[in-house]
Image (tube, rainbow, N blue to C red; front, side):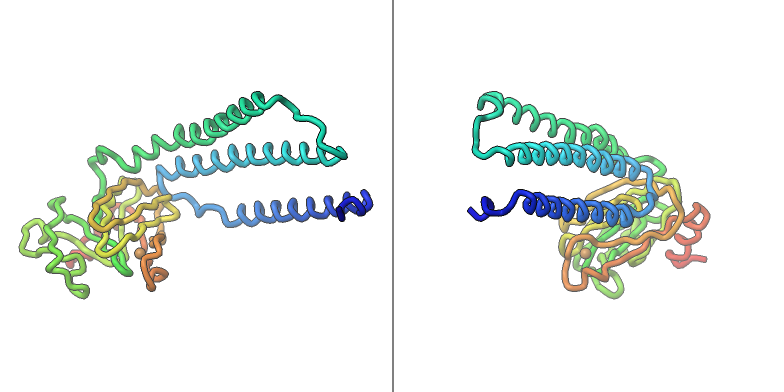
Amino acid sequence: MAMAHTPPSKRSVEALLVGLLFGFTGVLGVLYGARTWLPPLASKHGAGIDAMLMYLLVSVGTLFLIGHIALGALIWRAARQSRITHRLTPARTEWAVSAALGLLMALVAEGGVLAIGLPVWSEYFAATPPADAVLVEVTGQQFTWNVRYPGADGAFGRTDPRLIDDASNPIGIERSDPAAADDVTSVNEIAVPVNRPVRVRLRSKDMVHSFFLPHLRVKQDAVPGMTIEIVFVPTREGTFEIACTQLCGLGHYRMQGFLHVVPESEFRRWMREQSGGS
Ligand SMILES: [Cu+2]
């Protein structure tokens, strides 16, 4: 074999260089990742999502490192032998150790994620939405977000697909319905008061879109034929990007909206403006 003719010193230099290359790539990756980490948090439940991501990164990252150091050490040791001599342990022990380590990894990774994640899940997909929540209906379509508030009566008016007119009535609101009279609509702009729960009712007119608010750690698919409700509490004032994160067609890249998190008084003013009042 070719390897047998290579002097041992040259082989060590090669191994060192390859090791350095991998190490350097790893360090560069971590540095780059740390610089483009998550955008600054702006919601209550988001702290739990961040904790879950951090837990996964640290726990699985540590297991990954331990596994590879052990693998490297075993290869290093075996490479010094001129021939395969013996197994380290009987086959039964290999089996038992593999199964135990696999179970341990599943327990550490999945158990931790469930422990941190389940409370976040129940808050986010609240079975009983908070009474003071602001209700907003968001209907995705190629390539805009149609936004609707129920108005003073707290009830959305009926919609009918036959009434849809992309220019004047994009979600087909039946204006003859009394509940529809005070519905407030807007396109690509959502305003909500800070520190109050927001109930978003997600729908889609055409295909699967995904409502993504990176700063608020909110991401939920909008699926035609389904109404999916999520609850979150914005904790920071500001304007945050709403992106569509399902490739929904040629204009997907411009399916962008904005969430304005404002003080309660400004929210009321905005609602009056949208409903045409003064
Ligand atoms: Cu989309």
